[in-house]
Amino acid sequence: MFDKESHPLTKLSFLKQRERWKTEDIHVNDFQLEIAGHPVMETWEEPYMKKLAEIATTNGGRVLEVGFGLGIAASYIQENSIKEHHIIEANNQVFERMKSFAKFAKYRTILHSGFWEEISSNFEDEFFDGILFDTYPIIFEELHTARFSFFSEAYRLLKVGGVFTHYSGELEFTDEYVECLCQARFKKFSSQSVLVNPPRDCLYWRSNRIMAPVIIKT
Ligand SMILES: C[S@@+](CC[C@H](N)C(=O)[O-])C[C@H]1O[C@@H](n2cnc3c(N)ncnc32)[C@H](O)[C@@H]1O
Image 1 (spheres, rainbow, N blue to C red):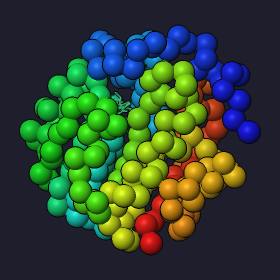
Image 2 (cartoon, rainbow, N blue to C red):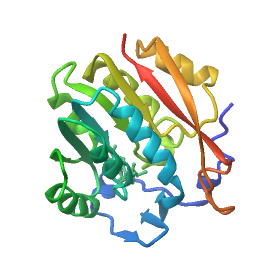
Image 3 (tube, helix red, strand yellow):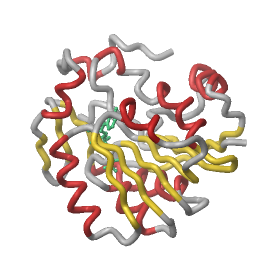
């Protein structure tokens, strides 16, 4: 059972107003992307991002990525054979970095600025062949639910046979996780385990393995 109160990220203060995330300054170094004092993305995740990108591009075609971060997954997505890459990003300064990425991207890359919650309804049903979702809990209330809240939208946006994957923060499919997938009408899912090496003081992942979910719309 997930205990939100004892999660190491609760040591940090969270924004009170979600909208502020868009205009927060970002701090980038060789190790991480920090926004609003939070370790939003760390480079030890690279092998995991590579796997998620591989899963999301299994069918090629049109791929949606939610959350650009350091652009690690985006670069891996572009290493695979696709037709079009859409990316939704909420933070303005990350969005500027994404513009430079798109300029040199191999495949057509279409950028969308804002929260996915404001943007995804612009896409028609079954618009995407693959989806990679990796955002961050912006307010405390989203600490455990940020990814679950996207599941039903992922189902709507995917073609039949399309593949959805996301940062899981899990080692396996827990009962709660499976329940959320089923509520969103996903029936077919499996996982791959990825070896990672987070630093001991990482505030959001401690294990040397992390689960890459492969969720297929049937
Ligand atoms: C964990 S990082 C993504 C890391 C990325 N996968 C990579 O490989 O570098 C999360 C990103 O999602 C963005 N984000 C957070 N919440 C969002 C939302 N609701 N909609 C769109 N972007 C969001 C953050 O600003 C941040 O850039």
